[in-house]
Amino acid sequence: MQVENRKPLRSEIQPGMRVLVIEKHNQATGKLSEGIVARLLTSSPSHPHGIKVMLVDGRVGRVQALLPPDGGKLIVKTH
Image (tube, rainbow, N blue to C red):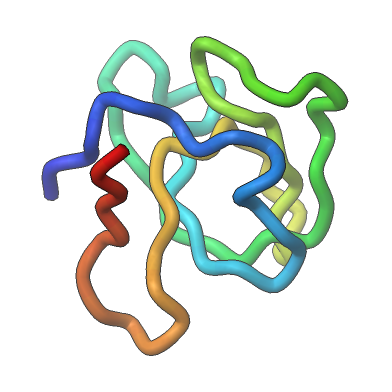
């Protein structure tokens, strides 16, 4: 699965959204995990490695991409 280079901004991420995150222990391999955002942990509007979130299952990671709610393909923004 290919992820666009630009990381989503904090303003684009809301609780309840499906996202792809990279967890701390997977940073070396780049393995992405899918989950639903429970809450945002990063307070700044952006972060070079992605906004840190807690998923509903308790995992914590940095958002690499937003996923549509219906299980479809990645949301790609062109701006």
